[in-house]
Image (cartoon, rainbow, N blue to C red; front, side, top):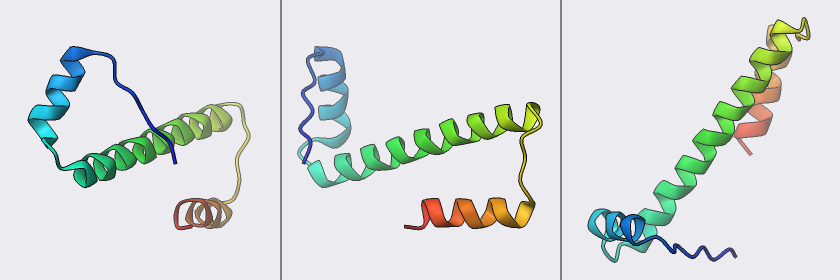
Length: 71
């Protein structure tokens, strides 16, 4: 379990206006945001690897992505 403290009145106000007391929705959307950011980071790494001539076969790439994100 991770507890996050927000010590920024502006962000607190935005969260309160957007989610009110719906903590489960806030947690769900925060989790989706973190997951999307991780995917963006992975894509950036993949692009750099491709530019450096480091590549894998397409079938292997799909297998790796499927294994990583469907678990």
